[in-house]
Length: 265
Figure 1 (cartoon, rainbow, N blue to C red):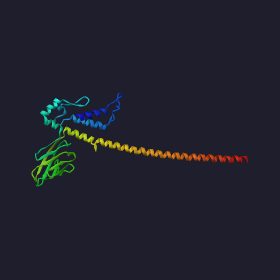
Figure 2: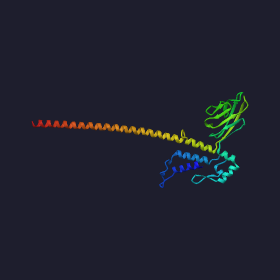
Figure 3: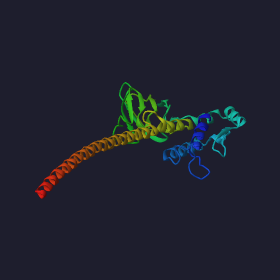
Figure 4: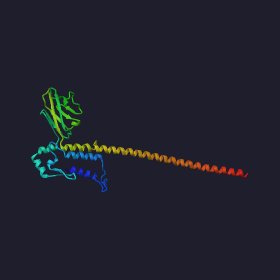
C-alpha cells in the first residue's frame, strides 16, 4: 500500500493541471503515453480478481483520489478465517493433474493459464523426451529444459519448475498444468517490465532519449563548426576584397594622374 500510494502521488503530480487548464509546473511528464500506460496497467491489476478474490475482500479500498486505505478489522478477519484464500490472492500457484508431476518452484512465474506435458522416461527414471500441448515433436529448450527428472521452464514459462516421478521406462500421457499469477506477482512483473534498470521500458526510453540527445549534440557541433569555418572564409574573402579595392583605388589614382599629365601637355 505504501509503495502504491507513493506511485499514485507521483502520477498525480505529473498529471496536475494549472488554473488555465494546461500542465502544472510540477507536471514534467504531463501527457506522457508511457506514464499513462503504466498507470492504467497497475490500476487494472490492483482492482482485478484472482481466484475469485480481490483486495476489496481484504478491506483494502481506493479513495476518490485513487489512494489505498485498509479496514484493519476486515483484514484481520480474513487472515484468521481465510488465510489460504488471502495467500492465493497474492501468490502465484501452479497445480498439476497428477501426483507424479510435482511443482518445485513457482516464484516469479508470470504465466497464467493451462498447458499439458507428456513425459517419457528411460529405464533409470530420467526424462528422455518431453512434449508440450500434445505435440509429436519434443519441446524446444527455449521453453523447457530437462535435467534428470527435473523440468525447468524458460521463456514464457520462466519461474516454473517440476519434478517427475513416474514409472521408469514409461510414458506419463498428458499431464495438465494450471497456473494462476498472483496479485503480488503481477505487480512485481509489471514493475520489472517497466522499471528494470537494465532493460525495462523506462530505461529503454531513457537510453533512446540519451541517444537522440547525443545525435542532436553531434549535429549542433557540426553546424557550429561549419558556421565557424564559413565565417572564417567570409572574413578572408572580405580581407581579399578590401585589398583588391585598395589596389584598384591606387591604380585608378595613378591612371588618373597620368591622364591629367597627358591632358596638360
